[in-house]
Amino acid sequence: MPRSKPCTWCACLRLLALALALPARSAEFREEVDVLAVLPANNSYLFSIARVKPAVEYAQRRLRAEPGPYAGFTFNVRYENSGCGNEALFSVVDRSCGTKPDLILGPVCEYAAAQVVRLASHWDIPVVSAGALAAGFSDKHREYSHLTRVAPSYLKMAETFSKLFQRFGWKDALFVFDDDKEERNCYFALEGVHSILDAQDYKIDVLDVHSREMDAEEVIRHVYDSEVIIMCAGADIIRDIMLAAHRQKLTNGSNIFFNIELFNSSSYGNGSWRRGDKYDAEAKQAYAALNTVTLLRSVKAEFENFSMEVKKSTQKVGIYNHHGGENVNMFVEGFHDALLLYALALHEVMKNGSSKKDGAQITHRMWNRTFEGIAGQVSIDANGDRNGDFSVMAMTDQEAGTFQVVMNYFGVNETIQMLPGFNRERFTLKGRHHMSFQENPSESSGGLGVSAVTGIIVGALLGTALLMAFYFFRKNYRITIERRVPQEDCNIGKHRQLREDSIRSNFSAA
Ligand SMILES: *[C@@H]1O[C@H](CO)[C@@H](O)[C@H](O)[C@H]1NC(C)=O
Ligand SMILES: *[C@@H]1O[C@H](CO)[C@@H](O)[C@H](O)[C@H]1NC(C)=O
Ligand SMILES: *[C@@H]1O[C@H](CO)[C@@H](O)[C@H](O)[C@H]1NC(C)=O
Ligand SMILES: *[C@@H]1O[C@H](CO)[C@@H](O)[C@H](O)[C@H]1NC(C)=O
Ligand SMILES: *[C@@H]1O[C@H](CO)[C@@H](O)[C@H](O)[C@H]1NC(C)=O
Ligand SMILES: *[C@@H]1O[C@H](CO)[C@@H](O)[C@H](O)[C@H]1NC(C)=O
Ligand SMILES: *[C@@H]1O[C@H](CO)[C@@H](O)[C@H](O)[C@H]1NC(C)=O
Ligand SMILES: *[C@@H]1O[C@H](CO)[C@@H](O)[C@H](O)[C@H]1NC(C)=O
Image 1: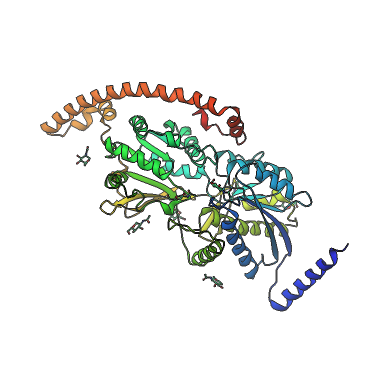
Image 2: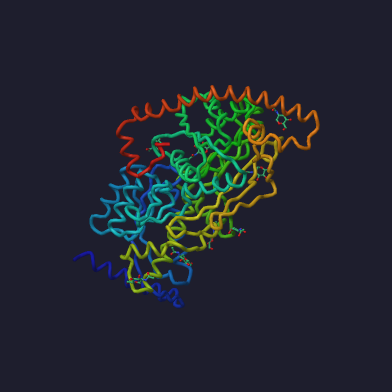
C-alpha cells in the first residue's frame, strides 16, 4: 500500500500544524467532506465553473477561519463540467465509480439537474443547487427528494405576480415568451407564473414568439385581449414589442406591461431602451409603461469584500463583463450560501450521532430554516426551496429615461412594500371601458355633469364599436394561436416531448 503512508503523514502534519497555529480552536467535529460541483465549463453561462469557484472557495475559507462549530470540516471540492444537458449525469456517474461524493453542488440547467438529482436521491446524496428553478422540482416526495434550492425558484417569483394581481384587481394576462428550446429559462419562468395564476382562476393566453421570426405587429394584436402582458425574452425582442405597443397607443394605461429579467438585471433598467438608432426617443416613451420584475438585491458590508474577491478571481481567468454588469449574480451567491447551509446541517446531524453519509437527514436539516447568507438572510421553506424577494422596477424619470425600484415583494411574509417612486396610476388600468360600462353604468353617472354624461355615452358607443372590432379580431387570432400549437408539436416531435416529460412539465398544454 504505497499510497497510504504519505497520507497518514499529511494528516499528522496537518493536525500538528493546526495544533501549533491555532491552539484556541476547539472544533467539535472533524470531518472531510467530498464535494462534487457539477457546472458548465463554458463561461457564457452565468454559473460557469470559473465564476462559481471563487465563491465556493470564499465560503471554504470563511468556514475554516471562523472559530466555531464548522472549523473542523474540510471540504474537498472537485469541479466537473456539466454542460447544460446529459454531460452532467455522465460526469457524476464517472466520478462516483470509486467513492461517491458526500455532497453535490449544482447542476443549474433544468435538464441536467433532473437527471443528476434523481440519481443522487437514489444514492442518498444531498444536492444543493442555485438553479433547477423549474416548477417540476418542487415535488420532493419522490425523485427529487434530496434537492435543496438555495436560489428562489420560478414558483417563488410567480408569487410576486399573484400578489400584484390581487392588489391591483387585474383579471387576465397574456404571456409572451421566447422559448430557446435549449436552456428554456423563459419557458420555465412563465410556466411557474402560469401554474400559480391558473390555479387562482385568472384567464391566461400564451404566445411563443420564436425569436427571429417574431412579428411585433402580430404580437400586438393579441395584446388587446388581455389586461396584463407578461414578457420574457431577449432585450431586442422586448424593445420591438414595446415600440409596436406604443405605436398602437397601448402604453397609455390600457395595458400593464411586465418584463421578467431575473439573472442579468444589471443590464436592465437605466438606458435599456437605448440602441443608438432612430427609434431611441420613441423607445424611451414606450419604456415608461414597462415594469421589470427582477431579484431584490440586498447588500451588506461583508458582501463588498466577497464581491471584490470574486471579481478579482474571475478577472484573473479572463472573464470581464462588458456591459457594466457584475460578476456576482444569484448563482454565484447561491453556491456560496449552499456550502454554509450544508455545514450547518452536517453539524447538527453529527451532534445527533449520525454522519455525513446520512444524506436524507442532512437534507431535511437544511430545510425550514433561516440563516445568514453572503448577501443577507436566506430563508429555506419547509419544502427545501428558498423563499424569494423580488423587485419591480419602473421608469421614474421620463426625461432621463431612468429606472428605479418601486416595489419589493418579500417571500418570507408574502408582503409587498411600496417605495417612494411608487405611483398607483401606473398600475391602474385605464381606457378598458367596454368592461365596466356594461357592468354597472348607473353607479358612476350619478353625480356627473351633462357634458360628462354625453362623454360617457359617446364613449360607450365608441366602446361598443371597438368591442365589436376586437371581437372579430379576437376570433381570427384565437384560431391562429390554436392552430400554432399542434403545428409546433409536430415540428419538434417526440424528442422534445421526452425532454419535457423528463421534468414533468405540463405548461405546454396551456
Ligand atoms: C459556449 O457557449 C456559447 C453559447 O452557447 C457557444 O456559442 C460557444 O461555442 C460555447 N463555447 C465552447 C468553447 O463550447
Ligand atoms: C394618454 O393619457 C394622457 C393622460 O391620461 C392623455 O392626456 C393623452 O391624451 C392620452 N393619449 C392617448 C394617445 O390616448
Ligand atoms: C446580459 O445582458 C447583456 C446586455 O443586454 C447581453 O448582451 C448578455 O448576453 C446578457 N447575458 C446573459 C447571460 O443573458
Ligand atoms: C438609474 O439612474 C438613477 C439616476 O441616475 C438612479 O438613481 C437609479 O438607481 C438607477 N437605476 C438603476 C436600476 O440602475
Ligand atoms: C477581504 O477580507 C479579508 C479578511 O477579512 C482580507 O484579507 C481581504 O484583503 C479582503 N479583500 C478585499 C478585496 O478587501
Ligand atoms: C437523530 O438521528 C436518528 C437516527 O440516528 C433519527 O432517527 C432522528 O430522526 C434524528 N433526529 C432528528 C431530529 O432528525
Ligand atoms: C418549521 O419550523 C417551525 C419552527 O421553526 C415549526 O414550527 C414547523 O412545524 C416546521 N415546519 C415543518 C413542516 O417542519
Ligand atoms: C416582511 O419581511 C421584510 C424582510 O424581512 C421586512 O422588511 C418587512 O418589514 C416585513 N413586512 C411585514 C409586514 O412584516
